[in-house]
Image 1 (cartoon, rainbow, N blue to C red):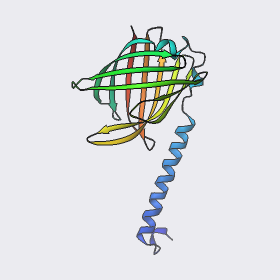
Image 2 (spheres, rainbow, N blue to C red; image 1 turned 90 degrees about the vertical axis):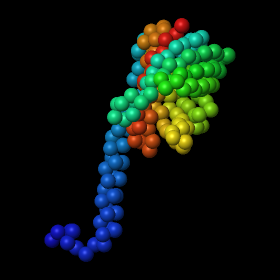
Image 3 (cartoon, helix red, strand yellow; image 1 turned 90 degrees about the horizontal axis):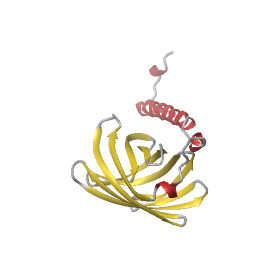
Amino acid sequence: MNIRSLPWPRFFLRACRRLAGLVALAGLLAVQACTTVQPEDYRSEKPALVLEDYFNGTLDAWGMFQDRSGKVIKRFTVVMRCQWQGDTGTLDEDFTYSDGSREKRVWTLKRIAPGRYAGTAADVVGTAQGVVSGNALNWQYTMALPVDGKTYHVQFDDWMYLMDGRVMLNRAVMSKFGIRLGEVTLSFQKR
């Protein structure tokens, strides 16, 4: 006997198909969560990143935003003026986009424990959490992102890697509900 030939209401069969799709998606997300990179994976990498040293003074950065297909949507440059007083740092960022538009973001960073930082900015929802290990920094945060007159809260998994005393590379993956939306790539150079 074929189960489809039974007198099931159509809404029940549609609900079962949707449930099967959700179970498959949950399984995929669970597997992905088990294979994520952790800051500790970089603990022996050199040079060791000390935020208070690298983000102190003026830095220049060049970056781009790519959508999930890999298409470059925006290119930009950033001038960052950074300073620390004790355990608190200020990163004053001025963005200039390829379309001529400009944006400012000011981060306030606070060292809360060895290798652990909290960060705030006007467009960050709540507090960013950062972990430094070896040459790497991983930030996790939610940003209020304006798009076409609406504001969306998107999650950032932001990784920075110190290459030498002057150069740092940055890759941030943006997602919403666990679905990858795109990524931001930056190269920093300390003056």
